[in-house]
Length: 124
Image (cartoon, rainbow, N blue to C red; front, top):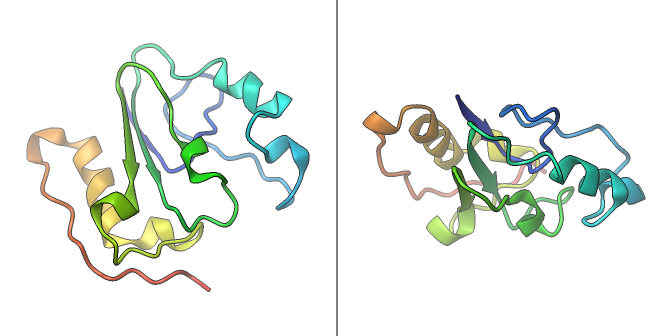
């Protein structure tokens, strides 16, 4: 099974990444909270290939490194390491052509292409 997610919040050991809807500054969203520890205890799930994509400019997930997993079958992608022109934020990351290429590459690695380096503006 292949899975692509932009956030570290993995539920039920499946590869599709789900971020629980919470207020912007609730304590359970913070790195190291009991909620996050409970979720992280189940990830990465055996047999799932993870691709985690993060941006320095995410105003909801912070620090951005909390988007990354450690383990076998895990690829962590930091967008600004690839392209300094990418200013994707929490909303615009999914519409970025750079993110799109990483997603397509993860889903079909046999036909992977280099991601472009093009300007990407934040949503707001």
